Image (cartoon, rainbow, N blue to C red; front, side):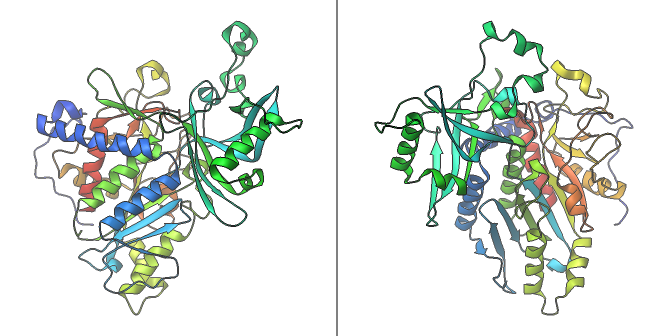
Length: 470
């Protein structure tokens, strides 16, 4: 990489800036307008399948061609995408330069912490019907009691029929809840540690209380099954072949008198998925081929054929190269990846004044101070972390500083050094010899049913991703 020459006379000090302090009214209005479309997106798309379906519709309407795993790519390809098992998606926009010279990649993840149903979940107790659940990702179990919940997902019958399920989103739909103990009887419960007060095994979803007319020992359970069969044409065994997710009920809402922040479920990491997707839609033909990857299963280690550890992303890029180059071989892919640049677009946490002791106040991220760039994540000795090189960090600084509207801030992990910290998919893509850095939006309440983001940070992320791709 050529040495970076900064012709601008700069202060010797690094000074953090805040979006709404720096921007003029025109940019502020754009940020608020952008936030409205984001709120609609994150309200409507609460599962990986829903996001993939929405992105698919958007791509098809914009002239992208959908391909499958075995389809040969034409040499004259321009805009392509591939859907992986309804839960992950990868898309490409051909650049002016040959793809073999390297690509620009942004990868984000579509999964969020939630409750999933166990395979035979329906049971009855004390004349009440319940669903057994298993939590997905890192959650605080007590946050999932006594709040309204929805059921969303897909059931596949024994005949192979796909049955979409969505209960709770519409105004007249019933919602579901995990009950909690009243404070009058919770003296012993409240003496326990938070992680012990509500056991994961006790996150049982209340789903019914009326008996079936049929005589049996499980008449309330039978009634629930009858209602499911009447509405969706499914039987109990069909729940074994289902992807049903329990997610918080409610739309994204503005936070604060100034409406400067957003509360919504699943902002980790759909805020980065949305901003990166919109940036790609607005760049036209880029100089280098653009690849956007939307993966599943990040919250549980990225394992599985839809996660970042799957070969589908690498295979897709190989297909593009093979289409462009009749002499394609494994060295073509190797050289392309080594010449590529990537962003792991994922959220981080901002210092919360209510819990400031877990953060390093000198280096911590601030809410509203722009998109965050993290040289490394992890914790306790940078464990489980990719670390971007000084040269790549300098390149990213140059990109961010080349647009005066972009407000950005650096981060050194998500908490104090001796805390566990957290990682992203960056390390999995760096294994292919790609330069990768973490970049994204800071949140409060990360992994809670409702997370809080800042509209300035969201718009800054969009601008930063667009500058990187363009």
